[in-house]
Length: 256
Image (tube, rainbow, N blue to C red; front, side, top):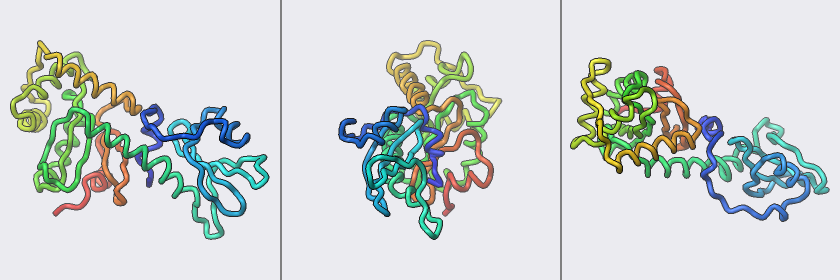
């Protein structure tokens, strides 16, 4: 996807996708041999010149396999035509990356987050956010023009991981009567924030924070902010850390 998701990067530890697979005994022997080395075979697809294509995932990345006409050998990698076009990209997008991105987005939508911006904003951006993360605050400030114009809503998937009181502060934000206002006050103050952590965390909020942190680990994300956004073609991409100005424009999209 220009590819996310650095999607291949992000999904290195992600095993949550459930795609109907044929039984291993249905694969030709060379395909089984690749599977035995750790690849997950997702789907067969048509390929030119007597080849039979197979979309697979290995170490979180999409891999195209091409079975030769005699059924005795398999080629692994990209297949190019005379114009230099990568014929492997479309089937990998269709059978590996698009379903995986949809599954990732669904997980993020069902996580516990604090909305920053209008519910009617045409663009939704997710980010894992720790209350003690200075780069989260940096991105929050970078995003103001788009958020305040109503162009983007950022959904802060709250976690507590950077400092001893991170969980308590994250819990305080989730426990606030007006979560968005509390987040705005905290982030706008930066280092001068007076946010007080919640010393006695309700079990429900603790469970939400634990679930968010588990999702973060499941996605192979080890630091905040981790930002997930749609690219120009609508595919899901990931940015780790506060973005550069050029990447910021990609994340936030056009301004009204």
